[in-house]
Image 1 (tube, rainbow, N blue to C red):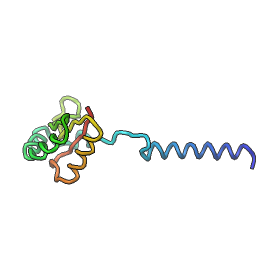
Image 2 (image 1 turned 135 degrees about the horizontal axis):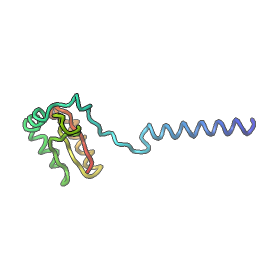
Image 3 (image 1 turned 90 degrees about the vertical axis):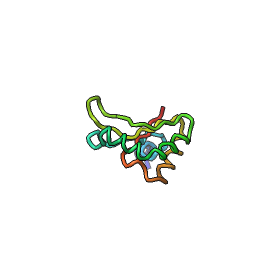
Length: 116
C-alpha cells in the first residue's frame, strides 16, 4: 500500500473519531434547553404550578445551599411566557436535581435547569 492511501485512511479515521467524541459526549456540552417560547405556559400558569407543587420546590431547594426554584421567563420581553427555573451551582447539585425530578411527578409545566 502506498503512502497516499494510508494518509487518507488516517485523515478519515481522525475525522470520524473527532466527530464521535464531540457528538458522543466526550467533550461536555449543555443539554439544558426549554421548549420554544410559543409553547411555554403563561406566567400565571407557571406561578400556579409552582404554588401547587410547593413541596417539590422545597425538596429541590433543600438539595443544595445555592439551589433556587422560581418562575423564570427565558423569552424576550413582552412575551407572557414562563417556566419553572431551577438555578444550581455545581455538577453534583444538577445531578441531584435531575434525579429528584426523575422520581417525582414534576410541576406540570416545563422545568429549565440553569447553572449559576
